[in-house]
Image 1 (cartoon, rainbow, N blue to C red):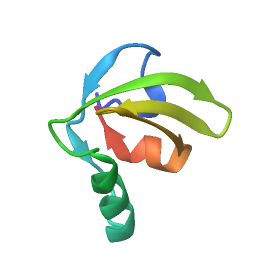
Image 2 (cartoon, rainbow, N blue to C red):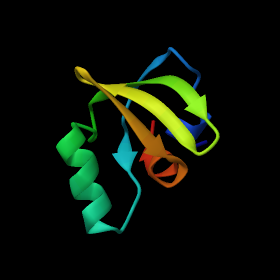
Image 3 (cartoon, one colour):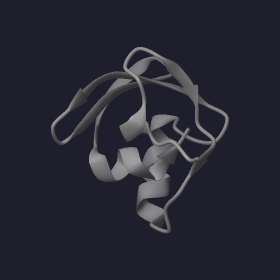
Length: 72
């Protein structure tokens, strides 16, 4: 079973397994945030339109489309 950031439990640290998208711009954007395979990510809270995540030393608000592309 594949799990995405949209399914993640708040406050639990996960390791990114892969980024599941064919969109090169989305891949580049996530990479610029430090979100790539092998990196740890924590969901701080789920929002109606997405979620707030902690990646490295930053907190980011990502929408549901991005959250579903990040396989953990």
